[in-house]
Length: 86
Image (tube, rainbow, N blue to C red):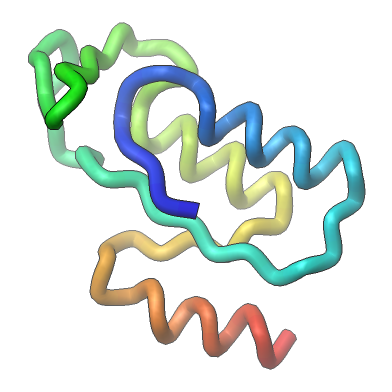
């Protein structure tokens, strides 16, 4: 799962995976973790309101759902290997 700051789609996806007890290994990354609050960022003009739309809130929702979190795009491959190995 690759997402970005702003909106709540990634949190809803994590909640879906947890609620439906999805067993498939999942790795997630959220772009824009270093974006300053209240500033428009990204191609869609994502705005951080300070709620569940921050990168950290999304990372935490992913962790709670059992998603393996990659802190950077460069870590996606190694996190996927770890997820597949169990």
